Length: 153
Image (cartoon, rainbow, N blue to C red):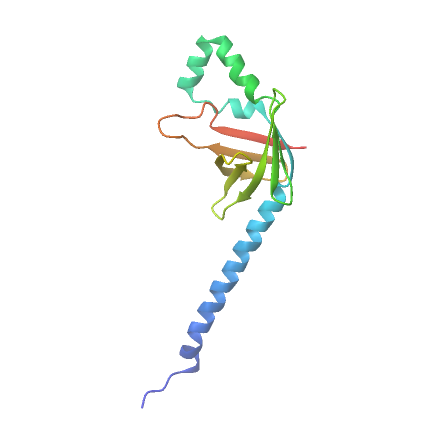
C-alpha cells in the first residue's frame, strides 16, 4: 500500500498559491506604474537630444536649418496622461493630439490616437519626476531622437 505524506499532498496547493501571489504582485506593480504616469510631462531637450546617434548628429550639424527644424519640433512638447486612460499631447506648433493610453506588463506605452494611429514606445525609466521613452525603428527608418525624456510638472 502506498502512502502519500501530507507534505507531498500539499505541494500542488503551495505552488498554486505562489503563482497567485506573483500574479497579484505583478498586477499591483502595473497599476502603481500606471498611476505614477498620470499627470503632465514636459519634454526635456538636453538629455533627449544627447541620445541622437553620432552619424545622425553629424548629418544634422552639416544642415543647420534641418537641425533647427528637428529641435523645434520637439522642444516644448507636453504629454498629459489622465487617470481615465486618455491622453493629450501638445506640440510646439500649437497642434494637439489626443486619444487613449495604456501600459503593458512588459513596460510598453501604447498611445492610440483618435484617428486610429497606434504608437508604441518602451518605458526605460519611470520615477516620480522622470519619464524616458525609447522610440523603436520602423523598418529601415531609425528615429532621429531615440530616447525621449520628460520631466513631470
